[in-house]
Length: 450
Image 1 (cartoon, rainbow, N blue to C red):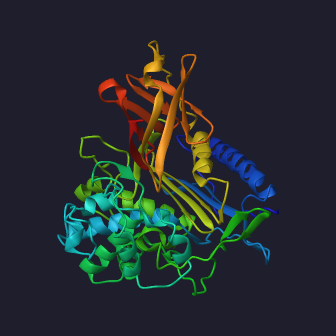
Image 2 (image 1 turned 90 degrees about the vertical axis):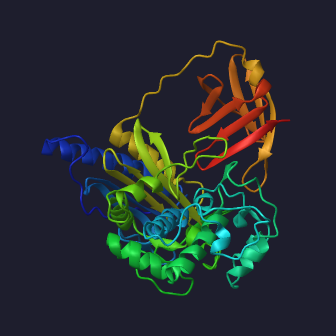
Image 3 (image 1 turned 30 degrees about the horizontal axis):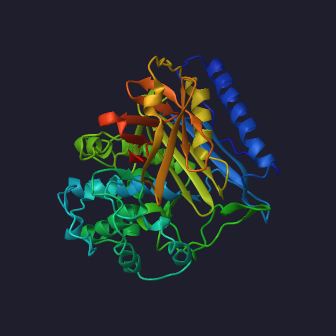
């Protein structure tokens, strides 16, 4: 597959003042990204990808590769718009916080104040909807959604389906990624603001941030420079399945470009969208009922990467994958948009780019000297859309974690009763270590020894 690249600006690499070094460093970054992306294009694993790496509003890399439309050999322009899936959630979160700022609602308000939805007598707060801690069943995991996704019905059709389902857990006891919560938040925004979700986001977020290539997705509208969506089939790339945008809604129906998402990061994280106190609330991770602090805030995750704070969210929707990461201490945005739902992760591409920009972070590996056998066993609990069954085994002095029939992953010792596998943390707790808590950033699962 041919490669097309538009490079609009390459300037000033991190932490360097010498212009010749800047150009050499920027060129090195571009060459590394070129090589990485070309492999995916040559193997026909993606149709196209757009990438922005920007520091202090100065582009280090702004480039597009591959095709916006394979059938017509239409090459991908740098200003192409993509469906951004769950990156939408930070826009929904910011909209809710704006309304809080205006005194029109409170984060601890009961959902029932704004939306007719049977919570079975449980109090579900706006805060819990924003942080996936409501316990309400996620609609995208229900078997009926596969059929519903291609159909157009009134929005409350979905509410009536979901409210018949049992809660996955009591509100505030765990964190299971949940699109229903953000669907409900879209209805809250409309109720409180008096505007449609589309109109509210356009007026109060896109226009404030100067995002001219961002909009609510449409199945019918013809949009200039929108990248066509693909998916990986048994015989290779194929057109993405149809999805009616009644359903992703405030959880995943927005479209944007890499340049616009960089503008969004600048506006959101530098006081143009929320005031200082409200912004702090926006990026404060949720605390569970038992006092556990998670890594998920309100439509955005708060983690450490490469020894730096990172505010990040990814997205996936029929035909598209997205990654938007912002490193606030360095004022660096890394945005990756792919018009293919398949095996290539934009988050992995973003992490590799961060390696090249910041250098790989060195981690001190702790040594476990006790008897690891006390951690072994089988643990079961609620996961996203299904129960999780995790088997912890000991091989020599090493622990492994095996999910159902997957291959076991080797765990690294962190401290006390805590082990890790990349960004996933495993914490054994309770009397006789009868409980296993798994923190996957986008989910915090509480499992019991089986």
